[in-house]
Structure formats: C-alpha cells, structure tokens
Image 1: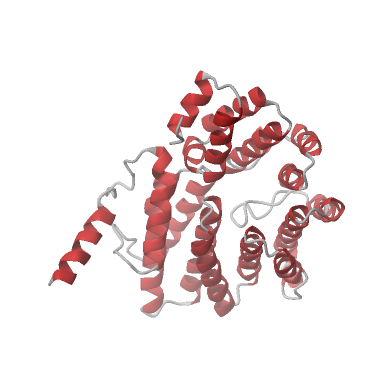
Image 2: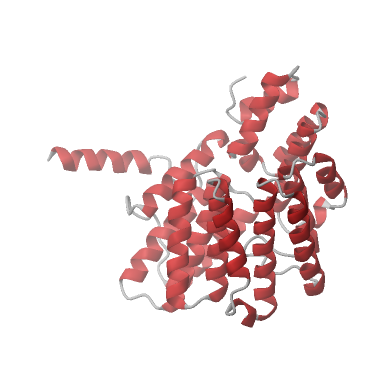
Length: 344
C-alpha cells in the first residue's frame, strides 16, 4: 500500500506542469531541466502519455511538429511532444508495430539525442543514441544508422575519447552502404566529416581540422542546395561555414572564427536553431578575443532570436556566469543573467 501511494505521488508530481493544450507554464530558465526530466522518465518507461496520437499517421504528424519545434527552439512545446512521442512510439512498437513505426521511433530518439547534447546530458544522450542506432539497424535505415553514428561520435568527443570519436565518424562516413544512397548519403558523409574535424580541433590538430572542413566544404559545393534539413540540421556550403566558427574556436584560433562568422548571412541560415547556434558561437568568439561589449550584444541578439534556448542552454548560462565575474557588468547583462536563471 505504501509503495502504491509513493508511486501515485511521484506520478502526480511529474504530471503537474503538463497542460492538455500542449504548453508548459514554467520559467524559461527551467525549461531545459523540465525537458530533460521528462525525456528521462519517458526513456525509463515512467509515467503515461497525455493526449496521445490515436494512430501511426497521427504519430508521424506529431513527429513533424516536434522537428518544427526543435528548429524554432520551442522548448516548452518539445517538453510535451518529444517525451510523448517516445512513450507512444514504444507502445505502438511493442503492440505489433511495423518497420515504418520502428523507423519513426529511431528518428525520435535521434531528435532526443540532439536535444540532450544541447542540454549537456551525456548519460541520457548515450542511451538515446544507442537506442536510435539499434532501431535504425533493425529496419535497415542507412541514413538513420549513419546519423546515430554521428551522434555517438559527438558524445564520445564530449567524453574526451577523441580516438574513438574519430573512428566512429570516419568509419561511418566510409561505409559502403552509405555510398549507395545518393545525394542524401553524400550529405550525411559531409556531416560525419565535420564531426571528425571538430574532434581534431579538440585534440589540438588545427591543420587536420581545416583539411577535413575543406573536404566537407568541397562536398557541400558539389551538392549545391541545402540537404537534410530535418536530418542533422541541414548540410550546405552555408552550414559548413557555420561549422567553421565553432571548429576554429575549438582549435584556439578565435580570429579565424571571427573571419568565418563575417562570411555568414544569418538570415540565410535554414532555421531559428541554426541562427541561434551561430550567434552563440560568435558570442564565444568575442569573449575569447576580449571584446566584452560585443559578446554581450551578441548574446542579447541570440535571446531575441531564440529566447527559450538562450535562457535554458547550459553553455550559454556558463558564458553569462563567466561574464558576470570577469569584469564590469551592465544593466543588460544583469537582466539577461536574471532571465536565464544565472545568479547575479
């Protein structure tokens, strides 16, 4: 009896912020924590789905909306939709779901992995990426298998396992199955090469990073138009240039990162998420160059672009916290810190 009461109390606590309309009433600084908590519980099989889609077709529509939420940095909506997709996807799969439903669940886990990487939640990220890979392999979805490998390489790099991260990314890029998937497969190869170049930057190999980035750029130029908008965030000459900003920062050359940033038109980037990421990388660049006011100005621009992401993302909070203690503050910086839940 005591155990049942405890479980009922926990379930009520977890469901309290959830509204039937699909919105979340929460301070934006806490949205990241809320999203992670709900993803964790869904992945562990805790709780029940609210207002679940009634059919596989409705589930596919809900996934499309989740992708749109991710691209628009709507964390409040994702905190409802993404955990629900995981729960319902598993329910449909275990009740005789077909290959299409398993493929959709693999893609859901890939989206969850990308979100968890943003939130610096490596343990859950490993779990989500591994499940995505197993589901993709079971259905023979070559592109999803390759994208799951890319996410695993990202997580290995974040864990400091640079050799393993390189091996995962480059082996996936050279896999013969991927070479038989046309332009989309070529774009995935470009994303995998970019992942490997990040790892070389982290390892201090600036020349190697630039060589691989140039390889990705050449491939993007050959392909032309943006590919994979909903699979890895897109691949094009413009997104490779965006990659250069962060890669040069990782390689400890902020001046080269700033040169890369000056070559980008933010309006031309394919989504709010990409523009927000670019502004975040530019803010880091200014911080490393000691251009404090430009850094704050860029963070405020990122907030206008994607307030929920700016207020919730741990990397941004860390930068704001560093600015607060490293020099004089301004009303604008203190306001941003308060809205982001960073102690002033």
